Length: 149
Length: 215
Image 1 (cartoon, rainbow over the protein chains, first blue to last red):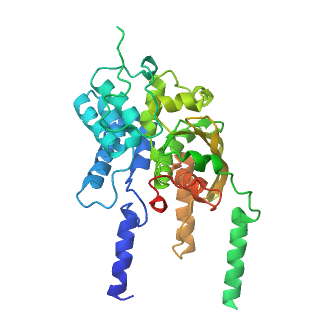
Image 2 (tube, helix red, strand yellow):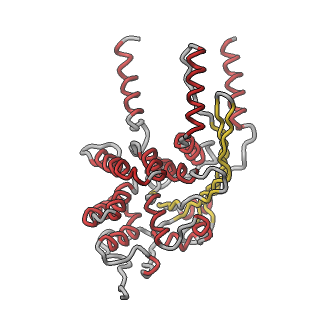
Image 3 (tube, each protein chain N blue to C red):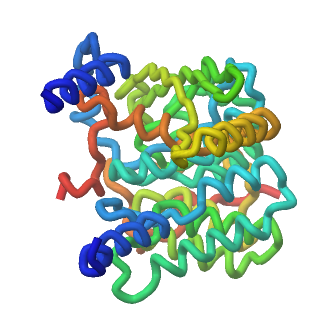
């Protein structure tokens, strides 16, 4: 096989190996393997967090053809919340809400949790009104609860 | 002559794969009326003997749902939030109506997965794993079922032949031992979840708002 023929094959092989196969909307990297390992062994936390960061970095590069997949920023935000990095968590939840309007209600709840304004037990909060279209980003804390002490 | 035998072989293989009897096409009228944009996947109910089947399932479900063009809520976060909301057991979650679960997250639809079978047969130098999965997507607004699929798959990890029969046997023996000792079902789960939503055409999940065809 001549070298000229090998180049497109090599590109395709590299693309497939990098998880960036042509025709897919997103590049999930090693997400599945890392989440599996983390579920099996919670001490694998650092690896899982690192993978989430990498997926976000790849999708955030200028000119990236594949955006950050849905839910990944929120997932990293939740991991940050668990380690007490509430400022970064809030930032990630806001970024998720901006990128994915479908996440708005959930992200508003998580932002409130990150800011210490609400507990994780959402059933203690009143359910905000659901509209048929996702809430616009400017809507102030949909469902921000009157906290009872 | 060779082309004829190749065609015959291909036809035989596709019949073995199980396309012999085409199932009735799905009624997608509710799905197409409601056009859900977001799907909440809750932890699977596990009726199998494979204790960590739900882990494999959850780790691999996000990719095909997102690739179909839907917003999918982060599955691990969802699991933890459900736990913090008093829904720590999959059976409890599956007993909760879709409207209630959807309201917690602001989801348009809820996918309730059930793992009915997940077991492996070890036969000398190969392992065949049989999985039977059910996927039920219910409307977060009305509670009605939008999509429902029973999916069965027989999975054998593929070995590439090195051309040397002794090397192949050694590789297969090592692989079988590894599979027995600590099988990772991520490739299997990846394949099953992909197939359930895409194969065959007509039984798959319709595309969502971010699907290229929708634009």
